[in-house]
Figure 1 (spheres, rainbow, N blue to C red):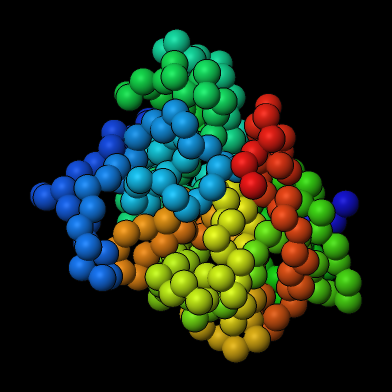
Figure 2 (figure 1 turned 60 degrees about the vertical axis):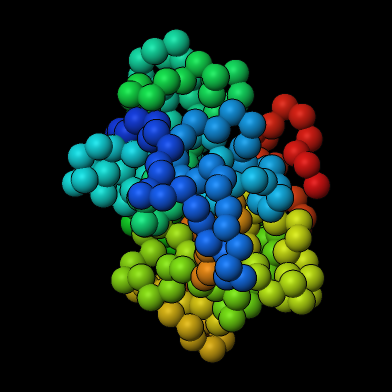
Length: 293
């Protein structure tokens, strides 16, 4: 057990509703090669895609697994996105699925969604307009014995289940993938990383193969080298950040699978340890059948 300040953190409920899929002024999405695509995009209740499923290969753009949660009031939605942490429990408050409990799996900037995972039988009972309440807990989480590692967007109970190890002030973190900062795109330069995500660009086939990213899964933990997320997202030599893959691959230039930050160290006091099972679905046992490779 790592020492934390979890006993001093505030627990508060924040609420939202499943957000209906969005379509802009025209349905086409333009790829960096000029190709045109008409595919499902942001938002919705997605019956057949959850954490643990492949990130690539879907006929979709910015695919968000399971439930895309949003509050129709902008101020309250800001609080939902700030307070909710990966691993928090989320309960359905009304409708046919009332009483079902899911888990927060990531955040998506721009659209300002919080993703919630439920079993498929629950997903099929959910309706737009029904209320889901997240028991937010984790904002302000710290590791007193690793002061050069900042923790963000992470439920304290989930932190203790990640298989972390502390050695001489550095944190060893199991990750499914290690990604160079050169591949990062949309979201770079954000002023804080307690909300939203930023994207891994997958348009360079050589880089994808070199770093083994063909097998990216939703819910994977991924380390990003030379990336400092202490006070926003910047390139910094020797820094390292770890996040969770929150949404799927993308069509548009500069975009790709989204990463929601969990840990960052400007001084490089994080050591990624590659483990193919470093995925939220495997860590929390969210799937009753084995997740796809």
